[in-house]
Amino acid sequence: MGRSASARRTASYIGCSYKKVERIRTIRKLGTPEIQEAVKNDKLSINGAYNKICKMRQGKESSEENPSTRQTRTAKITFSEENFTILKELSGDVGTHVNRALEIYVRWLRDKERAKT
Image (cartoon, rainbow, N blue to C red; front, side, top):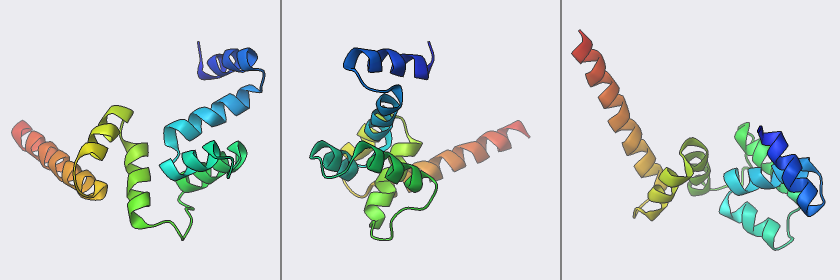
């Protein structure tokens, strides 16, 4: 069953459109904690939150967004939910951990290439 089919089935159970279900899923999966909280408190509509997430993913994020929020959003998009949860539990800046993980991965790839030759 495809993603839209699941959304259609869920929508029929709760009485809304499947697009709304898909947007809510996107907000839950990719939305920053601030966006999710704003939707929860009716300070931001589902469509407004979804559009904001789409703009952020296209690199058109708000200039008022601080670097820590951008790093967290990028990590959330890049990593699985399980890995993102692990990153959040580490002390320190998420960006530092992401950069360190990337350095280790690049080093591993280089070592792997050297081993082939």
